[in-house]
Amino acid sequence: MLLLVGLTFSCAQREITTPEPGKVIPSEKVKAEQPREEAPNIVGEEEVPKIETTEIEKAPSAIKVSEKEQKDVLKDIHFDFDRYDVKDADKPVLRAIADWMLDNPADRLVIEGNCDERGTSEYNLGLGDRRATSTKDYLITLGVSADRLQTVSYGEEKPLCTESNEACWAKNRRAHFVVLKQEAGK
Amino acid sequence: MNAVKDRRYAVCNRLLFIILLALCCLLPVFLPAPAEARVYIDITSPGFRQIPIAIYKLSGAPAGGEISGIIKNDLQFSGVFSYVDRDAYIETPLPVFNPQNWSPLGVEIVVKGSVTVDGDELSATIYLYDVVEGKKLFQKEYRAVRKNLRPLAHTISNDVYKAVTGEDGVFRSRIAFIGEKGGKENIYIADWDGKRLKNTGVGGDLILAPHWSRNGKRLIYSAARGRQWLIFLLDFKEKKERLLVRSEGTNIAGDFLPDGSGFLFSSSKAGTPDIYLFDLRTLKQKRLTRWRGIEVSPSVSHDGKEVAFVSDHGGSPQVYIMNINGSDIRRVTFSGNYNTSPVWSPRGDRIAYSGRIYGKNQIFIVNPDGADPLQLTERGNNEEPSFAPNGRYITFTSDRDGRKGVYIMRADGEAQKRITAKDMRAFGPRWSPEKIF
Image 1 (cartoon, each protein chain N blue to C red):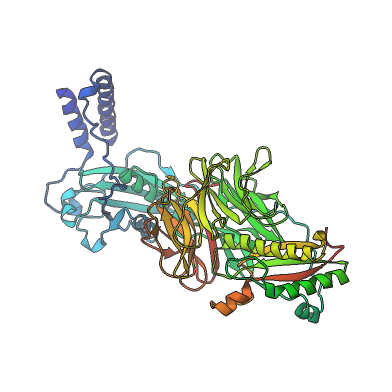
Image 2 (cartoon, helix red, strand yellow; image 1 turned 90 degrees about the vertical axis):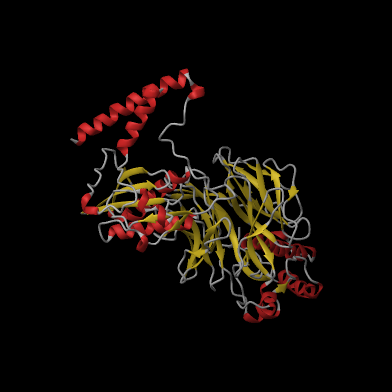
């Protein structure tokens, strides 16, 4: 045991450069330690690779309905904060859109659900999804066939108005309508 | 001379080792703590105070100064060390060490060393000293090509951090996030400190926060391309993405399972957004929630047994937890009426989320049982938290300086800073595991 303690001490002692306590060591008087023979750490690095992306077949492009039709018939409808039920005030708008769909049987309608900026992005995508879906469901009750209606949520990512006030937020909490050609659909 | 000395050391050590081993077997009760075992500083204890550290400017300009600057920045941000200014140092920068030169300054750890540049090759020798125990903790040599100067410096920081705390450092981890320039959104990857920014080229009309696999070799993410929300798997080895989910409706990728055998996602394919589990071995999808409202943002616990997610089932978006098979749903958040974006800490003891208070979203952390919610941010909107692999830091999105950017902070809310440039809109950050690709 004694031998062990002695040995430990002598081994440990040699490892430390022990200068006189309490004194600043003038650098020129100290011999620098020699690097020990130890394998150096080679720091390698994998680059962030360039990624080959998957081609998604081109989605049908929106056909231009006349500005007048977009403005007079295919009007945005709006929602309360964190709500997705169709408001009574917007029901006549959806009635007019349903009639327009019945008059234009070759066309498909995309309903885009949008939110204001106040929420967080993933939940807002869920909320935009519900807004688009409840709008779609209402149009179906008005006689529009489900397979002519498509929904997509853009959450808070495609604001119409970018100021941070209630007037602007109210404009952004909307369902927006885009008309697609039937043959370009499925 | 040195060789002889080295051999003597070796013999001495080997002899000691054999005797110790023998003693170990014979007299375990009387065995004292091995002389060289370091008593790590417990950085988790409530009474922990930062460790004063001296970091010399490494010789060999300009690379030496650059490397010591990075080490200093890493260790300061860690929260474990407090940096003592160089003006106070009285010891020579040479690799000699006398604890007496340091104790009057209150310094406990000293970093010295030198850097040499030979063509494209960098090499650094680092000495780490412990003032309290009066000894050298290590002496190490590092080599790298010139362009890997930053990884080299971060590796030194990791070694210093580990030698003092006994824990792995995370200074070589990265942060993946979404950056938007000129209307195009792409996945970018930067070092944790925001440096060495790279665009992966993966994008979409819109793209959401990517999720890392635990081995750092894959990402899962959702992108809107051509009016569809699609979920892709990106494999860094194959260098390509694979389309996995293209159901009608909104499909949003969540976390990978810990073993990488699958991932969670949210989809509205059955009518309303619900949580699903995608099995990557069978390519089958299993539905986990069946509520009629909005269920999004699934995050899996470190042991893979539980899932935190958001639901508006109770009338407003709140954080819930369920078992991985969808059973035993319980609510976590009760204060406020808009709590979203939950993520588990890697240790599984806390959940970070974004909660709305006084009209703004802020980052909170809470125990999984709902106890002790703590607000970490105050300025602007702060969203989309993600933990560093050691659970000690959080990256998040903030609009406190105007445009959205990626920020980092310690998990106690200290040391908040922006890591992305002001000319880029950046959001959806996710901290990588320590080793990636």
